[in-house]
Image (tube, rainbow, N blue to C red; front, side, top):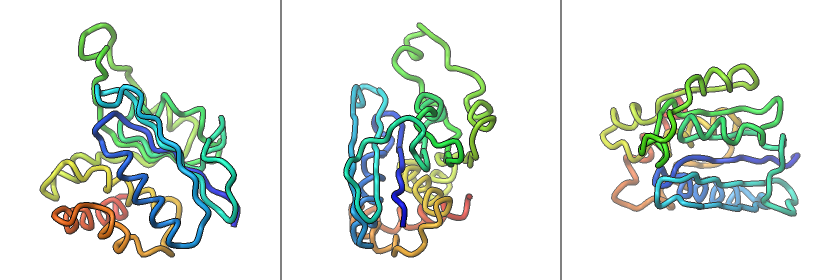
Length: 190
């Protein structure tokens, strides 16, 4: 198997780090060599968060260079555009059609950019979905990250891993059933 890479991007508090933990746990259980790097930045203040994950037979570094990511999972649509340069020309973008105002936007210094999804669709294969709406229909908007994870699994064809077992082991027990539903809803949304 050739090495693969995923870039998970969002805003602090959206669950990108937990999602990466689920991904890494499943890949390691499947026997892949896995490397992960995460950048929190000002995440606790609503800033950008990115997690890079490489996996394959032998991986030397978690760092993804320009034009090297097989997939970007954007928890917020402006973040997809911010990190678009990392995606391979034939890469896939799972984009949450959701706007979360950064601190500069919330303060009124700049406006939220228009056309984020359309810009990405001009250059890449894009699967847009509103993970918040899907999660809300399941009873808790906080499982939107696992909705996006389910979409990523399907888009990459990673069906040889028992993701139900991985999710059950990684998420807090009281949220297990909700997150399993979220995973399957996201999987079905692509």
